[in-house]
Image 1 (tube, rainbow, N blue to C red):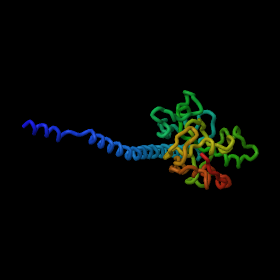
Image 2: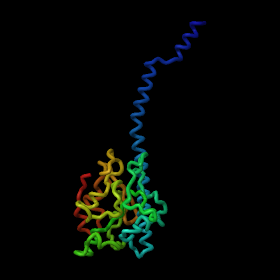
Image 3: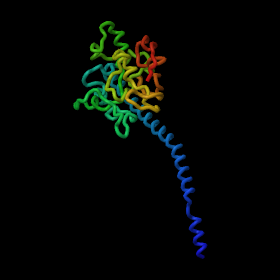
Image 4: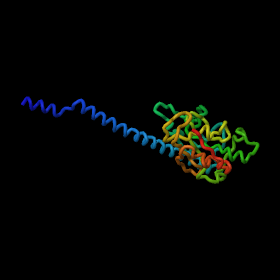
Length: 252
């Protein structure tokens, strides 16, 4: 009887080697599953971002519908974020989920901190088209960045609304409100836009590599475009045909 009991205890135990094998198998399975889980999580963030930027685009078209077909004018106070707030309602929609890490390391910037402008001073991923190409064509030599304050774009001026970007994603550390072709050394389309917010292996203040970003168009639609495809072969930020076909590829 004593021998039988000892055998029973040995039969139900695990050797050290067996335990190590089980642990190794679990580690291998975890290593195989974690990348898939990470991709699924990022895909969910991208889908959420598309929905958010689409809501901003629809808000802008609704605003135009209530204001003689004009999108929010260029302003140095009470900017588009606050102008459109009655339509998109929640300030949190201004921040893409991919721009909020667990430690808020990538918390997106705003250019102002005025407490009386709740939306304008909130963390913000998105940037609106500044329409520089069209204003420059209309104003000629009178065009400069100061002269376009108070100017607006009519929705009927945009001849290809389904292929003209209204909102995009900016570098999270940059506070710009307007995507201006004619500002900075290379223009905001190269220096301020983030062409790789999603599906990228690199995440830095200067942008990512590969992947792509989300965009809202002036017809109210929204979609994901791969890195650089908002600028080349057609510059989808431009209204004027000359600017649309004079596209450049970013090196980000």
